[in-house]
Image 1 (spheres, rainbow over the protein chains, first blue to last red):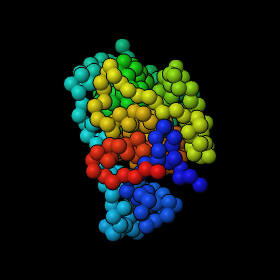
Image 2 (image 1 turned 90 degrees about the horizontal axis):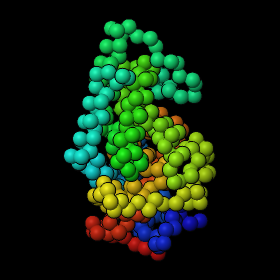
Image 3 (image 1 turned 180 degrees about the vertical axis):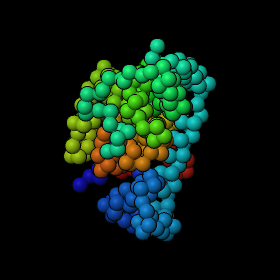
Image 4 (image 1 turned 135 degrees about the horizontal axis):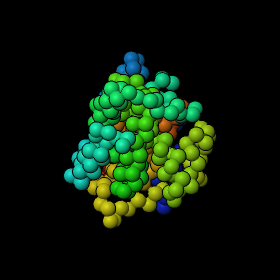
Length: 105
Length: 206
């Protein structure tokens, strides 16, 4: 079966980290590890399953690369969220002013 | 589902009659717990709609509704999640219907449909030449995701809500949140492959 992420939008399939052709894991195993990495980064894992992922990231270079890229995307998204433009700040402040005091009037 | 999230599925009670003193407390509660999140609401709206004026309308509408239904909110619980749930419902019910993507509501999906999503979705050709809203490549890729995926990425990666909170905000089951997030990230990874290569990550293609 074609991996689920075989989205077709004019490009060939491309991958980072785990899904590389020389990865020691089968596509199914990669899929499972990536899913675990996501759960790990989302703070959804505890105890043993958490330790398992930590170990993978330390011991497998493909897992580590995947992990760092996932982490990086999240960091960039968060940063861009925080760099609020002056214009956006003004809009937010205007709306806030409108609702301050007696919003229903 | 906890009480503070129950704003739908039943007819809302009319806003209670308030004495002047109660009204003052009501207004204070709104100002103290809701207004500080205006910025989050606006930015979520901006990324949902991709348009400043729509985002502004959506933010105001959300705050109006939040004020109207504030008596249903339990003070000092998760105000931001409560607001985003209102925003989410407002967006689904009143805004998306009028947009160019004729996508059925989130509730209409089943698990199976998620994996056939290519058939039902097109990528947004989000180019944003005029507005210049989103400067970086990652955010532009985010804006290309179908809305149902995009909102989950925003809630999980940017707002850092737990899966449980995301489920409450979006009315999705936790399992659906998890599987759809996974799917969303796959698309994002693919959209960002060139970017990854430019950062020095080794990429491959077949």
